Image 1 (cartoon, rainbow, N blue to C red):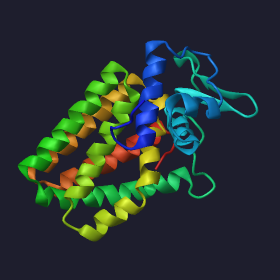
Image 2 (image 1 turned 120 degrees about the vertical axis):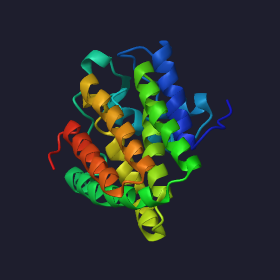
Image 3 (image 1 turned 135 degrees about the horizontal axis):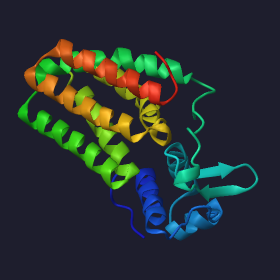
Length: 228
């Protein structure tokens, strides 16, 4: 098997999600050991382990100590996966940091919008909406990441953009973390929030873009059980 799209761990996670969605891996089924599964997929065990952590955050699999990794039945998914970085950073602290950094990125990016950037943000917002509708959680999260990173990359303050990139792994996990506990009404709201941010950026209204991003991150935090 050849992995040729995107980072390796995301490609592995997409492949495993495809196997779950197709029924090749069934709810309640125990996955082969990581050694065997890595061999079947022709990938390294560290890359496979990272992919499984991503799928666990999304509520697609669950790893039980001394028992192995199992495909979760959607009807029995836990409210949320454990916060992976709890030993280093509190989940609330990360969301608070997101509010501060991303609102300012949005405010400044509104002054530097170009047609290509707006086209990319519109495409990411549309992919975010479409992937949720089709149940493709990996594509849904990847579109979400592309949307937020696209805004950060458009910010004319390079130091702030670079600061965002240094903590991107933590921020990315807060975007995945609420997925299992996000009800359809909240997701429809989140989709609308993305479109509202794009609209403010398109008008060059930095204050509105920043406020909409603040509201969006706070609402996402609430879906993860964190009140800011």
